[in-house]
Length: 232
Image (tube, rainbow, N blue to C red):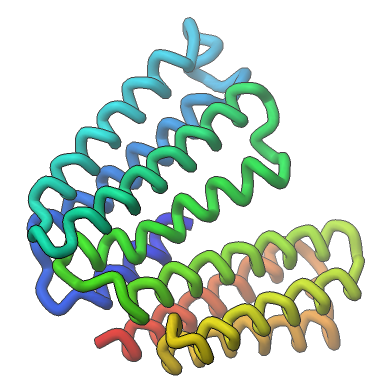
């Protein structure tokens, strides 16, 4: 989940800055905070996961602060807002995981939103303004994450109608974003592999989880390539 928005974000910066290189390790530390919050995990059995989770989260927050502090003045306030949102959503997700609600819809959406915001954050600290390309990159990543969530739940429940309705809504939302000027045409085109996956899954559902995973890898790679080309 982390790799996709980070790659899309880096593709959208004209010049890779030291600040933009700090975002990936900070994002990994935020993910580790979630992992360390899992109840019953290895660290929990060894004497409590919570201190590890706090340590990872603090280290991640320090990294985000350093990255934002190095951002040029015109984009610094936007970077602060995005960094706070990434941290708050990530912290909220870790809290839900710690409470044993890590697989709830709220927890999963919070994790996806936190990850998706890494793309515009990467671009803003890379001294790109928060305009159509940065905003659109975040919207595209979030739409893809929601699509993946719906796809997995459809595989488990067999509710094809839910899959079709959800993806129609996601596609419609991206089209509205494009019409409103918040999404570049190339980023809208990057969602086409997702639509192809929906059609393929409807006509020929994957027989097992491995087949589903292979399709998802192909879709994510195609999405990243198209989005990366459109942002360059």
